Image (cartoon, rainbow, N blue to C red; front, side, top):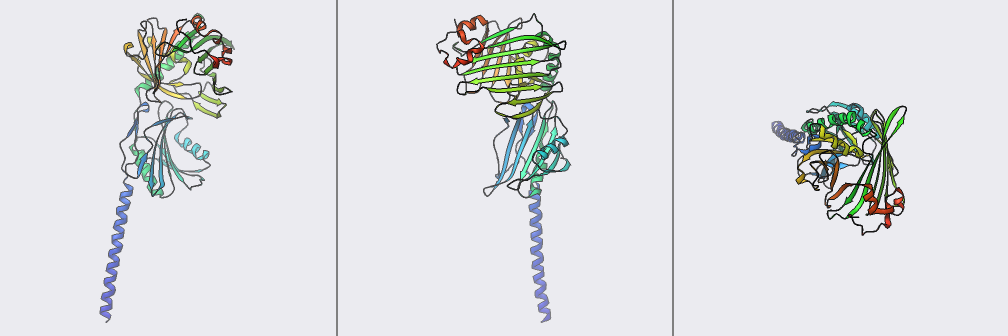
Length: 446
């Protein structure tokens, strides 16, 4: 009897042991599967020399490729869902001109901005020197965060953010797999852009300040049928402060569609500047006002009457937009067209711009006098570019403006007398008051 009982208990123990072993094996297999994160095909960001991935699998979805955001960064988004709820969010961010601090300090800044606590975790394995950590911040949904920052060349940085609500181990596996799969290569086009912009500031800025140089430049804005759409005028002047010259570039732009703009850029020899832009739209009673102030150290403040003050930082290839045409004209005497520069707009956007020489016959605008055409391709939006045509003396003759899903517009260099003949009393700063009553039957041949 006792022997039979003993045998029965022994058999039960063997079964339990087998069940335990099977459970342990399944657990180990599950852990192995969860630790192995398969990456999808890398998504390239050509403007940054970057290629990064998102996880692969039916449970993962993406919002598309890289997209440009108004905080001067490109982002790439992915999301893992389960049973109708979000499990993990992934956000890559390629920042153009954030505060150029160390990766460790940037992590601390991000944690502080979220009223959270940072737990540094060191350097993530992979080709990039990405420092990362866990951020505990108060959220309504109980999320936690893994954040990584890598400093890149030319004032750029790369950030990886993983947000999750449970399973910290899985989230960290995803983070480490993504960080380890990122690839980066310094871009020769940005190196060339940085070198040429620095040479331009040292050389051409002095020529722009030449009192014998051109003072006023006018453009007639037309459609492809040569019908007038508006005008733009650029006026250069000099002033002195503390025995140092200051360059003023004033711009007025009027368009029949209901736009009037006034811009004033004042820059010093140390490259600090103040730039104010006012934009009136026919449907708005008050103008949109933006003021940019840059100090000699390269810190820029942006104030607009439609948003809070924000800050950005000069990159070595940054050009305020009013200087772009002068820079491209100057390149005639400099080697190395085929470069990327950062064009700073009056509203504080930084637009990576590729400059390349093209055949005049391939330009979106034609001029018999144009012997040299440079395409400025604005890389924040696919299909947007300007073709700038110059004569043999390096004078700007024509700008062909192309935007996605819109017909090309032509900016033809012309005299202010001709513009005044076409637009009459509207060709004055006070034209803003009557701009919206502008007659539609104008002729470019006036």
